[in-house]
Amino acid sequence: MSLHLGRSTFGNPVNQGNVLTREEANTLFHEWVLNPKLKLHMQQVAHLMKCWAAEKLQADEATQWRWEIAGLLHDADWDQWPDEHCKKIIEELERRNIDPEIIRAIASHGHVHFGVIPETEMDKMLYAFDELSGLIHAYSLMRPDGYEGMDVKGVNKRLKEKSFAANVSREDIRDACERAGIELNELIAFIIPRQAQRTEK
Ligand SMILES: [Fe+2]
Ligand SMILES: [Fe+2]
Image (cartoon, rainbow, N blue to C red; front, side, top):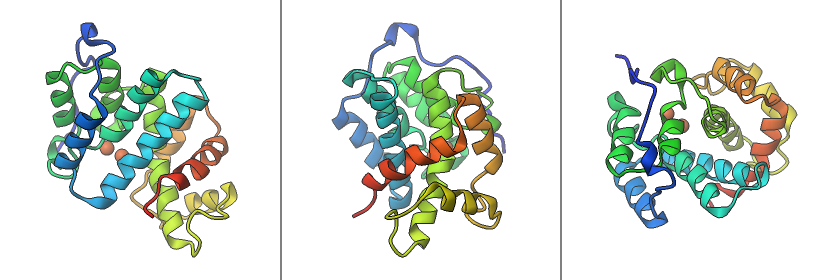
């Protein structure tokens, strides 16, 4: 089964700046995603995207929200329609006339699967956060103190252990860092404290 999208343009340029309200985004999120683990993953990636836009790009609130939406909805169809991932959420956002920048970022969050190369900074950071965020969260679950005291070195050790979170592609992580022009350690150091803020209490 191929998840290749077979196209490289998404949304309509006239919809630039169109977003879902927070309420609309949350409604879609909770209706489409039922699995609590997947929900948490999407919320964590959303938080990382927002933090990146705010801290690294000094983006205004509207931009931060666009980044956050891309993270929040990137796996929206994975739970109930895995065979249509991420075609279904893309088509839904296109139907709702959402900003093409957001749709494109979602479409390129796994270029090996979807056949869409990450181009913009939003594309690249969503791709970079996705797998690494999952591995770091898996690591927190096996540590007695969760995120507390977690350091870059520990995450690197887990990355080298092939059997740890074996479904997380080390190759994708390496490729994503290269595309985003970020050192792996820098990315890990960015994720740990911020993801710790966005964890199940
Ligand atoms: Fe995905
Ligand atoms: Fe994901």
